[in-house]
Image 1 (tube, chains in turn brown, cyan):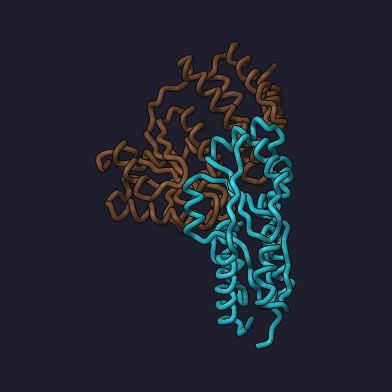
Image 2: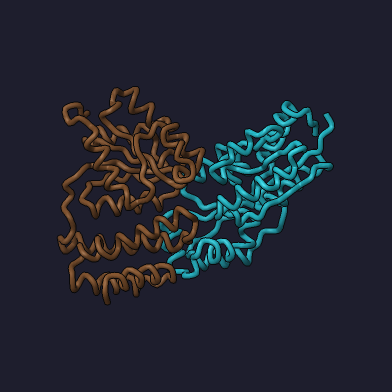
Length: 221
Length: 199
């Protein structure tokens, strides 16, 4: 099966809820070309499509969740076989803002960043502002990536902006924001104090590179 | 000022709101939007805006949580007031109890959604495969709780089906409508302050 067909089939399997066939497809590709290729050549483009469909409400929660599970399974196998890029970048702290429990987007972002070689510290859902900054300081992270789905929870990101600023980390810890509400209302990125966003999970490694470089290494916390 | 009053509400709270309003404002024009639009925020926004535009000359009480990205813009329009609360569960439970359940990672079943649970989970959310549904729910929630608001008999058959589907027991918690009532009364007072519309 060629690459184009494999991607098409994988997307179909995810849409139809056929987890077994999807994993077999990726395992089969990996047997021929290694898991690294299965991730970067087959899985990532399909996850990118899914991210787009998710943002435009054209994919079910179940399909999005299944895609994440399939990606986790493949990443785990790649790690076990040491066929994945080593974590040479980061770390980056990610999490859903206080009061936000919509984890799918954050998980997809984590998958894409890990496959791109970023070390990720995932704080999970409903994370208080101080925890983001504490974790960034403790781990030497230059970027905090915060996800929010709804308008009201996005407003809680302002607390993280204030936490960064009042503790003197402005310009030293960058604040990346994302989630469905920012796609619909991009002006919110600046309103909540965000310093960057990505239109989907595929674009996040590029965003992180840009934000990471923007921090002067001499000023790190 | 003698304006007509429109109450726009999600159908998930239909029976509860009808109980709360039955003595408060019998002349209100009650409009309910299908709760399945919760899964389609853009469509929900468009539907709400279309209804509210048609009722532009009326004072409007919006009984909704933060269910789409433009709720704040909608309520900022003249003669419109929205209830306080992030979502329908918080409207029913009040902020403190809602936070308690949320922090305990409980999934809350409201009466209307419980009766339509297959439509919600299998059709709208796409969990036709019970094993995937179970994995999703058990990974993300610690418990399932049915909120018995007293407006309908407890749907025991559906709760059994839900328990079997997710392989998680559903506990039943009886709650009064006092929080919803307070939220509606508070919103009504704010509306009165803006439009002079009394209940």
